[in-house]
Length: 211
Image 1: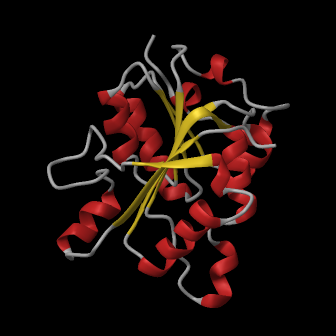
Image 2: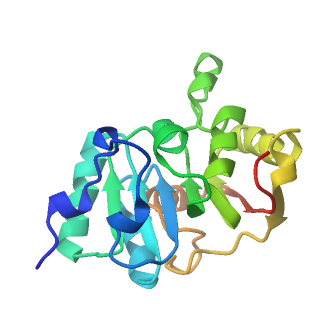
C-alpha cells in the first residue's frame, strides 16, 4: 500500500517513552538525523542515494515541515520519516542512547545578535546529548557560512573538556547526493553559493561512550 502522511510523520511528543526506531522504519539499517531539514532537499536526495540507510528529518518550522512531508509522500520514500519537533527535545528526551549513526547539522541558525546566542544549537548541553545518542563510531557533520559561529562550534567540539575527548576529527567529504561544487546540497548552500559565500565544514567520529 502507498505510504500516507500518517506513515511518514512522527509525533514524538505523543510517544509514551523513548522512540523505538526499529518499529518506525521498514528496514533495519542505521539511522541518520537531518537537524533542521528545511524543505527536505538534502534529506530526500541522500535517502534516495542510500536506500539501505534510514533518515529522520527534524524540523520545527511548520511551513517547511509540511512542505517536506508532502514531498516525502509524493516520492514514496520508505526510508524517510520526519518530525515537527525541537531537536533539543528529541536528543534530550526521546532518542535512545547509542541509536544514531550520523547527525547532519547544516547551516544552523547562527543567531548573530549576542543576546540571542543562548538559542544556538551548539552548546555543551546539546552536544553531550548528541554524544549520548550517537553509536560508537558514529559521525557528526556540520557546515556553516558564518565564520564566528564556526569558531564557537570548533572550540566546543575540539577543545571543550567534556566533549573533545569523545571525538576524533575526520575528513569532511561531500555528500554523495550533492551536485558538483557542493558540499551537502541543501537549499541554503545552493542559495549561498550564488552569493559566493565561504563555507566552513567539520566532521567528527565518536570514539568513546559518554561517561
